[in-house]
Amino acid sequence: MRNRFKFNPGFLILTILLFTTEVLIALYVHDNIIRPYIGDVLVVILIYCFIKSFFDFPVLKTAIGVLIFSFVIEILQYLKLVELLGLQRSKAANIIIGNAFEWIDILAYTGGFAMILLADKVIAKIKDEGNHPTIIDL
Image 1 (cartoon, helix red, strand yellow):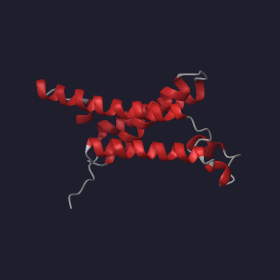
Image 2: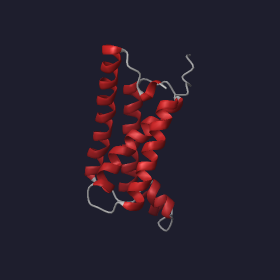
Image 3: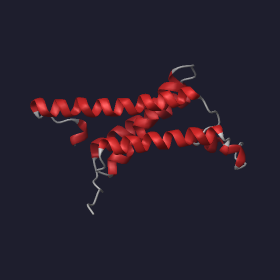
């Protein structure tokens, strides 16, 4: 079995940038579009980049895994997991797991998934055309 552990500083930089963006959105953006929907798109990309920071898994398999994970979290929100665990007063549990199921979140996660695949295609094309390095190649 091939060792899939491979540190990628480019993906780690993207992870840090996306995490910082998510925190800034959570703290300072109180609107009806960016915080609830763009944040959900970005969280899928954030989780993907975090995994790719340490593992050399195939793009599609990793993206599908992250998408399924996101769907499971949304289903747990539908099932009111935070309440079932008695954690409704825990701010951390409400932020991490969430407490409000919305079908549009599923769409936002799927948008993040699509952006991962699109970015992979664009990066591959850039590399093929001129062998230009990208941040992911660091």
